[in-house]
Length: 405
Image 1 (spheres, rainbow, N blue to C red):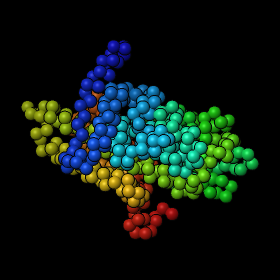
Image 2: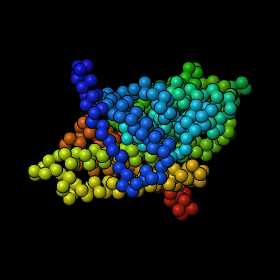
Image 3: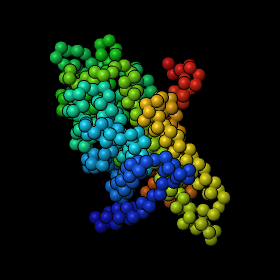
Image 4: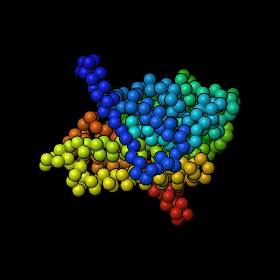
């Protein structure tokens, strides 16, 4: 394809991003002016910096590293982290809206941002020393550095407590060994927040920096999902980690699970954004596509699909808003976050599939976003706790009997 053709496609996609957010219950009335301004600025960013290029990035399985600095410039990294460390000092509704708008553009792009904020910056801020906060957080917030989070292992996904990655105390340093996989951002990451067991089997967080001898980040290829994000492994072969790089504020499995709660909250909003994009595309297409001498929007079954989509999106908006308020108050529980995460992702997957049907054959092309969202959401329904694990988290809360322990 010639340069002129590529530019023409980019201009066409940019002009075609006519997204209008559904708000059937006037939920905007629950937002303050700062919330609306933040949402508007991120939406404009997505229309300019992501929408025109995302189909090409996904088709080529290309991670646009330049987006990292751009995310930093607009405040997408660590929006709830205090301003003194480079964060936005914003509330959780603002954080949710940022994730919603970015994932409206693409789940892989949101993964890049939410890993940086919730899984790298959050534990350093929450469990780190003041020296660690000052050393790492400003560069992560600005996008100068990219981070990743190492918990999942080849043989331990839903059962992270079984991890075998470990470190030993060697006097003036720790010696880290093991491997992590399915790690977003890892091939390009400057630092990794890694969870490993000490000699007593207690889980701790360690900050591992690129360039440490024995530390490598092989990239994962052949993905049919999240193709515009970069995924890989973390391999530790006798890596010497300075003792100053241990996160001292909390140990045990509860520490990484607190990080996952923050990430799952962002996913609940993000998946809602993907659903909104599919619905908006289907609504618009149905009004324009003529069959039997009239727009397909006039047919009962199409109206049924659109009505059901809007209902589920509205329910998700209200659920996420209430959860955001509880996050602001510090009262949100892990099961409540699990409910929102699994609800949003399941709803988004169903809407993507229904929207694809409304588009007919055109729905499988890159001219419309449904197939890309659908493939992306197949990862989102699995990571940060699988769909079934979140059901069991809720089940344990309902019955008082954990089914997975």
